[in-house]
Amino acid sequence: MPIPKPFRERYAGIVDDPGLFFETIEKLIPKSFRVNTIKSSSREVRENFEGYGIKLRQMPWYPDAFVSDEPNVGSVFEHFLGKIYLQELVSMLPPLVLKNELGDYVLDACAAPGSKTTQIAAMMQNKGTLVANDISYSRIKALKFNLEKAGALNTVITNQDLRFFPSSSFDSIILDAPCSSEGTVRKNSKLFNIWSEKKIHGHSSLQKQLVLKAFDLLKSGSAMVYSTCTFAPEENESVIDHLLQKREAKLEKIKIPDFRLSPGITEWNGKEYDPEIEKVARVWPHHNDTGGFFLAKVRK
Amino acid sequence: MNVLKYFAERFGIPKSLFDEYGIYAGPKGRVYLGPKKIPERPEIVSPGLLIARAESAVKPTTNFLQLFGAHATKNIVHISKEQAVSYANGQDIRIELEDNGYVIVECSGNFLGCGMLKSGILINQIPKAKRQLVKYI
Image 1: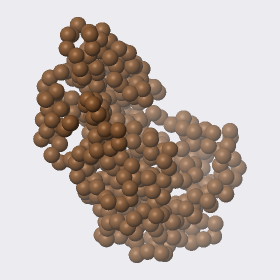
Image 2: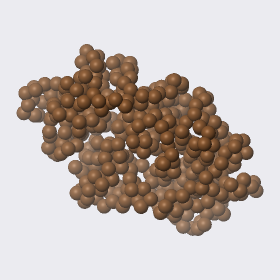
Image 3: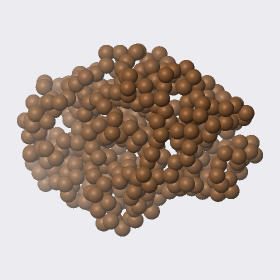
Image 4: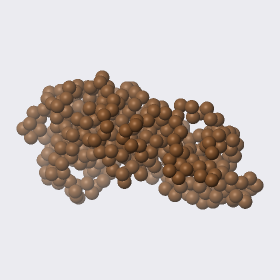
């Protein structure tokens, strides 16, 4: 399906190179995976793939991340063994942002199917306690499967609507919110069949509740990351602006060496956001040849 | 039966490896290895990694043996790469061994998981959802 006109109109004005942006999102996304350091190392995986004759590109911004020539990368022995995890590059960003300050008691608030959860478990070196929560009981099955395949020993699963999660004090939180998923169109070309601005507004109102709740579950002085895989400002900057209005939250600028991030927009549809919003990070697909993504790092 | 004692006796996997973790019992004899500190609320759906089902006998899980196979000293069955491709895809394998019981299946330093030796056949214990066609090994 071609890119819908309202979609083009929405984003042509906020992206640096609209032509290249629209061209890129019509291309298939390169096949990527992450090395599961609970069971292996990037060195072992690199050497084994060399033996198979499969060309890999190791990402300079995250040595555990690889892009593969072989589209059927799931058919390597390492995948069966749980030594690699097929994961989109942008999906690896939220844990990476908190890598050095995860702490011992961590919440992955919307965890299923577990790509980021298994990554966080590995970053915690399988120690401490990681709470992997998801509202959907049917998605918990995939979450459990993936956690066990990865060998996570520090992770418990809960099945709660985050809005009613009992009061807690986490050292760090990842809130990868349910969203309109516009940024995944490179792997799901049918996305535009179900795309509508009405859906964006529905997601936005839930996300505003979730971000406040996640902030309330955070220990004072600690950090959380809010992320989505969509371009819609209503689900991104607008949600963070809502948080800044309702809570004493501080934004921190995100930097990932060798990975290009763009600042947040400070105005959308005539509404001006808090100037601090510029500190959030947008990932445009044509900048790093990835999917689309949004990240905000919030300190309590 | 204490499953950690079973792992030590059957496979030589030392109990001390698990000192930092908690052992939790679930329904139908399920035993989990998880974090020591677990929140009281909300309700826990899974407290960690399912390591065994212990009813009349202890059955170790493939996920557990993949993770800790490297610490085992006995009851390890070595198979060729060709056999590993079959095993990963759910096939049983004929093996010239007279022992019986649960074993750890290994190929070139990689631990594929659990197997059941019986009358010269390595009966496949890889859960259906984990089986896959391996093209590169």
